[in-house]
Amino acid sequence: MEKQTNGTVVSVAKQWWLKVNTKAVRLGPADGAMFPHIVKVSYTVDGREYVKRKWFPAGCPTPFIGSAVRVTYDADRPSKARVFE
Image: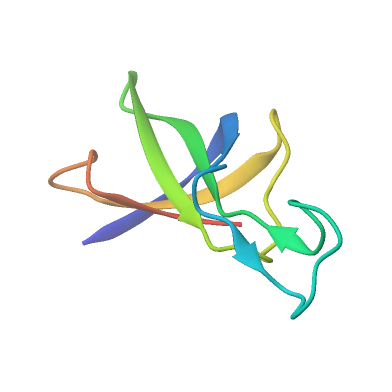
């Protein structure tokens, strides 16, 4: 059975080593480049704090540090969760 709670974004890290080029011809090394992000979300279930990492593809909007996100977790195993923006 799945339950929901609110989580807080703890960190947002840009993956510099996975560059996605959006232009056919570039004038510089980062011209038209987009990067995916890894977002860490902290959430609490029954007094215990968990941290979940979520990968956002390049071009998708990422939440800001300190913003609230929705977390759906398994009632039997709260460490198994999904993060929604």
